[in-house]
Each structure stands twice: as C-alpha cells, then as structure tokens.
Image (tube, rainbow over all chains, first blue to last red; front, top):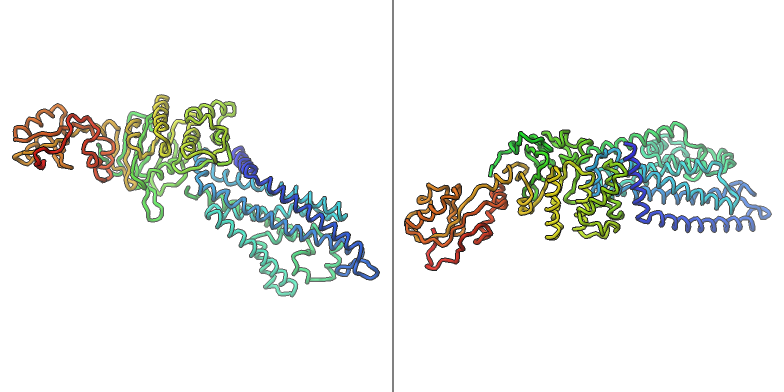
Length: 298
Length: 340
C-alpha cells in the first residue's frame, strides 16, 4: 500500500506543477511579500518619525515606545497572516475539490482504479500529495514573509514555527473536509460547501468569543461546538498566539474576558486536549472519506 | 443461433474459464442494469459481448473489475473473486468513456500505469515501446495527451491496456473513434493477441468487427442474455431467399417439406434448409408454375442474429440485394405480378 500511496501523491504534485500552480503561487507570493514588506517599512518609518503620544512617543493600547511599535507591527503581521490563511485555505479547497470528484467525472479515475490499487490508497495518496503541497508552500512563503518583516521592522514573533504549523493545520482541516465531500459531491458543490462550512465555523468562533466576553456560557458554547466540528477557528487562535509578542499577555490580563471577542488577540495557546481532538478529527474525517470512497460506484 | 434464457449463458466445460459469472444482478435504484447474467469465457478466446445501448455491457465490465459492486450473484476473474486486487494485476482495460491526464505525455501516461500495475522498473522501457508500437502512436509518444485527437486517445488507451502482457484484456468499444485503417490494425492486433493466448473481452456495437475476430459471443438485452454461443454456431444456420411469381398454391404449403417459410420484402424466406436441397426447392417452385427471378442461398450475418435476438427489425429488410452468396439478382418483376 505504501509505494502506490506515494505514487499517487507524487502524481498529484506533478499535476499541480504541470498546471503551473507553483509558478502562479510563487509570483503571487513574491508580489504579496514585496507589497507587505514595503507596507511594514512605511508604517515603521511613519511611527518612528512622528509618534502621537506625549513628546512624540508612540502610543498604542496603553503601551508606549518600543512596546507599542512591537504591538502595532505584530497586529499588522497577524492581519497579513489572516489574509494569507484565507489564501491558503482557499487554495487547499480549490486543489482538493476536483482531485477526487473531477477524476471520477472525467473518467481518469476509471483507468487508475482498474489497476491493482486500493481505493483507500488512492484517496490517501491524493490527500498526502495536496497536504505536502499546501504545507511546503505555507512554510516557504511564511518563512520568507517573516524574514522580510523581521529584517525591515526588527520584529520576530516568539514562536514562528508553531504559528506556521497551526496555519498548515487550518489548511489541512479544510483539505480533509473537501476530500470527504468530494467523494460524494461534484467538485464545484464540494468546494462551495466546504467554504460555506469554513465561513460558518469562523462566525461560530466569533459568536462564541462574544459569549465569553459578555459572560454568557450558552453563547460561548456555540464557539466551542463550532471549534469541535471544524477546528479551523481554534487553530487560527493558535496562529495568533504564536505571532503575538509575549509582552501583550500582560495587557490582555488587564483587559480581562473582553479580549475573547476579538479574533486577532489571544490570551493562551490552544490546550493540549484541543490538539488531541484535532488529531482525532483528522482520523475520523479521513476514515469517513475512505469509507465513502470505497463504497462509491464508479 | 442458440437463444439462451436468462441465467444459462455460455458453458465451455473443457476450457479454463478466464471470466465466469453466475446470476449476476446489478440494480441502480429501480433500474435493473444486469438481470442474472451467467456466462463463462474460456481462457485464450476472443469474446464478443454485444447488446444495444443500455443493455448492461459496460456495467458487467465494471463489476468484473471491481469498479462497481453487484447487487447479487457471483463473478470471478482469472479464478479470483471479481474486483480482487491480485487478479487486476493481470488485466488490461480500455474503458469506453475515459480520459488520461491531459498534462502528461503519452509516454508518461504509460509510465504511470507501469508503476500502478506494479511492473518491474527495468521492464518499463521495453513494455512502453512495445505498447506504443502496437497501438501505432510511437511518433506522438512525446506529446501531451491534451493535444491528442479522440482516435489518438483511443490508441493510447489501447497501449495502456496492453502494458504488462495481461492475461485478460477488456476492450469497451475500442474502435469507436478509429478510422478504417485503425480498425484494420486493431483487428490484426487482436488476432496477434489471441495467438499469444490472451483472453480478449470485446464490447462492441460494430458487429462486422466482432464477426471477424470473435470466437464466442453473448448478446445481452435489458441486462439478460438473449443469445450465446460460439460464433460459428450462431452463424451456421443457412437460409434461402427466393423471388418467385405465378405460384398456383400458397408458398408455405408448397415448401413446408423444406423448412419454415416466411415472406419479407417481396421475398420468400426459407429457414432450416439443407444447402444440398436448393435445386429441389427451385424444381418444386417451377413444377408448381412459378416463375423464379432470384434465388439467394445465404448464411446468417451477426447483424441478423443480433436483430433477431434483441427483437429489432431484420437488417435484411434494408437490403433487397444483400452482400451474401447471391447467385441471382432480382431485377424487378417484368410481368408486374406480385410475388407470393
């Protein structure tokens, strides 16, 4: 099972390369990093040359001086990462949606599955190929962005590797859900459904945060539930936590529960129990996808 | 013609069966695609699997390859349950509606299938070259499949099916996109494969092709076997077409001793006739005062057998002067009398 699994994964990666996906992603990433780098340096220069605090010092959220600068740059970085996480999530969905459903519709799967290769192997191979693509792209472009921002502004998040890992996790969740849906739905329907569910989970997370902020446990549970059903929002909070300067935690302590309402500041990393749940979620969804695909008539 | 009821199919007890099905049923919701298919395909034969559109031919192939699951019944391929991964190692398949990865070259598609089929790496090169050559696409092997014509894609599909010298090759409408030269080449190829002992399972609508290459045939209609047997047996029955006028008695009565008589398109059709008795038939007609304009002893064509099996109008009605062993042509009716 192992060799054909890697064969299918390699075929999936080759397809992406031949379809010029890498080329387009490299160009877009280069443009995005250049633009955001220019933006970061402009913001830093503007802040350093004319702060709005007493005596021209920088002031933000009760912080002053270097700390305020760090806070602002970190928030900008989180916003850029938020946009990037969307691009990554959309890419994962767009690549994954046609990979099973499209091959079934076109008849490519007919020729492959008549070979001595199991359905589960085929499905996991496709998943692995896209997962590698998404993670390698996320890691490389994330590292480039962080290095550029660090060089231009002097800010480097405390745990950039963890932030990137959570970012990949978020994309992998969407990839896995899309693969499951595409074993039964057409490519377009699977993609649209997955994005809609992603959006709902995002809103669910915000509503849950508001519930926590205003002390309404029933509303807070909406967020918990949505994070369990689709762990993207929980993983996003992991990204944010590892991009924030640690000094901000003091500030958040002062702000109390209110910070829970905002998806761009996080007080604590996702608990280990949540991470264990995410692993279980992957196993269950991939298992369901394999089961569904094995039972599928071709 | 040996019309077989559902579930009887073909039996060739002395040969090893490459493919065997017993009461195979496949339903899609309320639609019955296969209704108790029982057949046996001896190893090393070219097997024609015929039927009108929607008869269940492609469904049967998909069940044999494990691409779909039967509702009930049993099927085996190369002595193992249908869909078994080991048996698929020794099978080639050219689907009817398919596409290969448009972004790969023809040679790369073949390499992917060598890999998926589990062939040993050192054999890939010779296998690919031989398959490309056999399918007649060696000169386009380096081009992307996306630029291939439909006929070229079908040739590529054939090359893929030939990889690894499979024991059984399923060809689902393999010549539908080929030009006449391509069809001729396909025929030569099938003869060559049969000489090597490969079992060929041929789904086709092109009955003349089937007639030229198949050893054995099953005709399927509405998911049931309606005719089955060695091709030679199916086509062995001879009949006589006669155009005659001026008979004093009904032809059926006059010729009852020779076989069953029917009338079609102005001809008397006599079935079950011993070929040696054709002169006796003519003598009887003349003795009864008949004026004989045409006498056509003919062997049944597969097209006729097919039409008869699936209840379609006889193709003979379309061809007043069929291309058989016609001894005399009917040049109309000079005296204006209607033949009887």
